[in-house]
Image 1 (cartoon, one colour):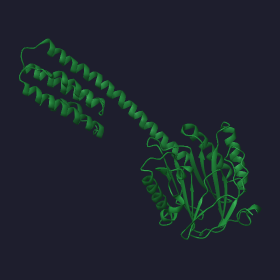
Image 2 (cartoon, rainbow, N blue to C red):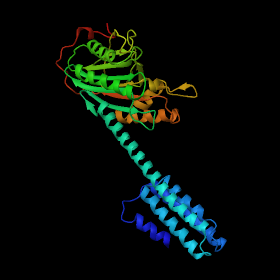
Image 3 (cartoon, rainbow, N blue to C red):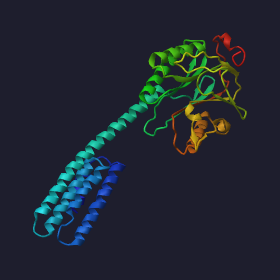
Image 4 (spheres, rainbow, N blue to C red):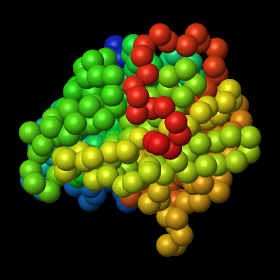
Length: 375
């Protein structure tokens, strides 16, 4: 009865308890009930009251400080009740009761510190989510003549942001898409990724030539990193059904067409941004229904028991049906199953489908885009 009264005094009128608070309260109730039963069965002598002091600490591992304080009041009340119903009051009994009171205060302080730390971590997580949305803006469902979807798969359950990046813009020169991967991890990678994206979002509207965009991005990276830092990147442009790709040390995109998967290798290799890449474009004609997968090297390096995920072999099966969003969801599910839920690196994915339903833009086509495969 004393326990119920004490708990009502501290729990009633407050907001609903979280699952952690309920778990901590339940564990403390079980301990107090067990000690009470043992004490009752042992007779009038209060021999086990010291064990009651463990209840507030047990609650402090999960519950808020208010719940811990309620458990401490209930523990103290139970201790006093058994002491008064037993033999004449002894010094040892008084020490045990004081120990319960002291334990309650310490446990409540510990719970308060833990709660503040948990709130700070939750706030940092929310800020990281906001930063993620600011750096990687949502794509789709459509841009220009392309249906498009993007997906970021974090290798860490504690963070949803890293050095992988993507962006799609509808510019006067056609739909332009950038995907990139910053060397390294953590806040430095996020900072460099935001620099690349900020520069790209400006120059993509100003430069008619993709090679000029590469030069601008290379200088932005070179000004912001050390000698060993770099960013791999691929830039894609769709204009009037013509697909142009320049690649700076990045995994080659995959073209999905009528059940086939074509790896769009560059005409010649080029180093990443930061190493003054000299790129040659690859040009392809698109057909309505063609799909293009852009990805970072986290996908190519995902492996299980030393065997890499068969991206090209399974691309049509996973990505060739439904909407582009459905395709990326299928790819992510298959990938997570393949690696048994353990990724070593973040992965950025962009899937596009050419619909051919928008009028051809009137922007001039650069001379280097005439022909195929950069010729």
